[in-house]
Image 1: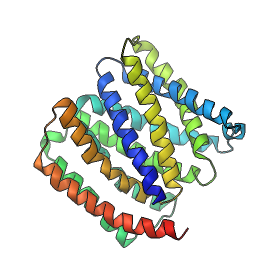
Image 2: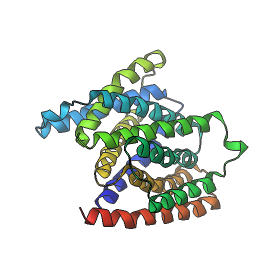
Image 3: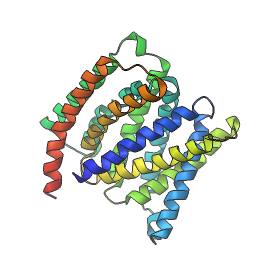
Length: 283
């Protein structure tokens, strides 16, 4: 139940971040958006650490793994932001939900997590739901879709590294190094395409920066109570949420296939939820 509560915060944060990214797309370069995300995140997380009197959280003996994690996370975040500006929100999230496939494989190889029968069934229904919604065919095999699929693979590597870091590092430390590592990289890449923000764009930067931080804080906390593949499977709930927002705010088409796919994903999550409840209650 504790992991589920933290994942609820993750879901809402990612949806709000997607809305912010959509509002900024086409007006502000993606690298610049990622730069402001890191700046705002670094200010918030550093302030929290100092106010809480936990200066020790600013130090880490696993800097190399932090750098590795954030290299892949940065690439995944860039691909995700690009996709948000080119594809319907629900399609971006659906393509992103290939992450559990890659995560399960990577976690099994490097973290030696077992792919149990229950987990396999849950993943099967989750992926089946995504396939029903996307209905893969020639029409979705384009550059934008491939970019988002590439982002999904990068996210899987990042999530697996996060699980490894969470065994010895606090959520605050992981988030601090996320912002610290990605800030100079995004600044360097944005200098040649810099555009000064104006008006409400500053508000959207705050939304993106704040929700990026809260999403990963909740994600790291959730991973402390459940295996990485279980946490990412729960993340499937983002799809029906963002689809509704896409319909209401951007007049994106709401298709019946979404209902069918959503039911399949919810069933997969229910299977995992029953296992998760037992695991947390026995802690």
